Length: 55
Image (cartoon, rainbow, N blue to C red):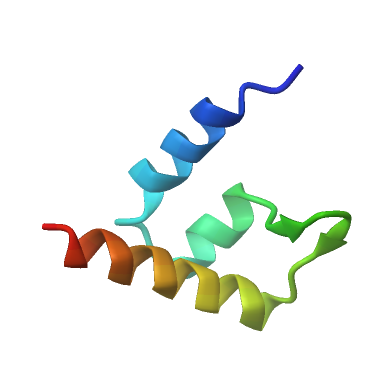
């Protein structure tokens, strides 16, 4: 079984890296469908924006 919480923490910890590095390290999917590159980039931008707003 995959430890989802660890994967989420790994992604949050990696958000300081550039997009290309993150896209190489992680796979992004919604259900069974893998996100397109553009969708994944928008998701990363959303995560960064939300985390910055909470600071």
